Length: 137
Picture (cartoon, rainbow, N blue to C red):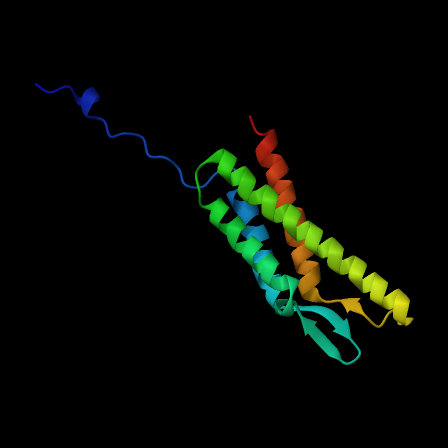
């Protein structure tokens, strides 16, 4: 007679991890925000895809891909690196807006658009998720 304990199926490895939801939300915020207007001027809006929005779009894809990988260290890298990159890009663009507003005397005329705000939120979500993944264990 066969022993039923020896024929047990091997345990399946989970795909999602503790930071998957945060990485998916942060990645989608970066993806959508990269395509929306980044700067609002009196003459119209400037799209993010004309420059740094392409970089944040790539970072969003990296974050979503990391959410679907079951390895903890890889997930930390896929949350931390895009989060830092996006934060640096947003800081650079905000400093650029302040510089252009101060040199041209047009305070209140150049405003950050909804895309820039969404991508800044993506950086916060991704960095918070990376810190959470690091502190687990």
